[in-house]
Image (cartoon, rainbow, N blue to C red; front, side):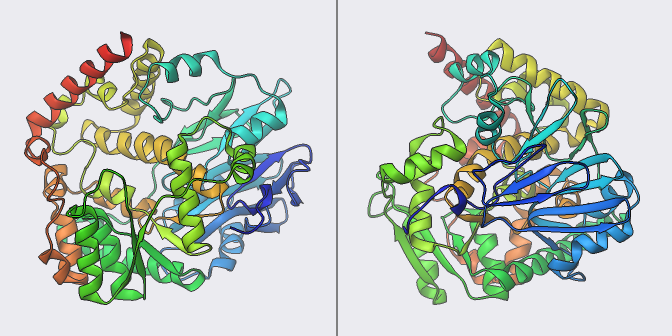
Length: 488
């Protein structure tokens, strides 16, 4: 890797009422706010009288009607308030946040899965500061570490995200997916995007609309980056590959972990697929990050992350540099209901959700119940599993990996990161999604030969996850067994 420093990071920003000299670039926004950002972070801003729209990151139109660099102008001309902005965000995709200023009022909306984070803090004078990194903002504002967060992490599995919207610092919060930040009222508010009900009339209409959206996103991404697929023996990465081979040239890689032997399906199946389809394939040996780069990375994300995850990101950066790596968490957790399988909606109780946190403290339990209480006010019971998977697993947990990759300048994107697409999928019964009907249909349309290779043949417990009741019981048994181990 070439010389690396703070400003080599992608998707890094800090907005406050003061300049942060660590960042090379800065803009003065309408409301006496200063947006500081790294040299490899794109910022697009447009003013129209008292309105200003600023897009930080990589934002594209999933309808393929707007050019990337015209989106800020389109939004600024089209909207008058936060409600009219929410009506339009369903068509956007990528990795971004939107800062909308209407006179002195400021509102912040993130992408569909909060892959570009917003950590926000209000001081005693009601002044807002927000950033892509909790460590950047906490070191800039000299925030105190949260004892509550420390207690939660001490009784949680390694690398697990904090519950609800907590951060590791006092009074610093994370903006969850499906929420916008209402700065005038100092709070976040859940919202739901609007789309034509005819798009979700039946499975066929959802499939067709999904194909159109994903094809548009993939094509838009390919205008700006070479696209790389992390291929495994599983379902989700093969869906990504099916859209890439249909629309673009691509290449694939798999990490060569110590636990794999020469017969491991995790490397053998991707190799066979790539050989048969004439796709470039790389088996990556994980590299140890040099100390001098580690220090620069920790100046952005802190030192609490699991070193193995940081080394994986470093290895990808060394191999693929500025190419875009496409991950598939959204289609895994929503498209096939990977987190909750086909567990019946009537079992969507607090106890079961708590088992999915892998966190064993009383405070984590309290925060999870608090989150669920707010969620139940907004959605019907048949949407609880999907919203938890999106907001907590993809949002809170996925955000941790996103922060690591961005700190190293790795461009990690998701071709399914679009609110309309996600909510269309939730209109399909989870049992149908868990049977891989959506995945199978995508491959049949895009690249049917991908169905000829085995899926996860090394995984020996699929019979547990495939049964809706054993899936539920196994989660409870695993949770309480691990809780006892942590408590000893």
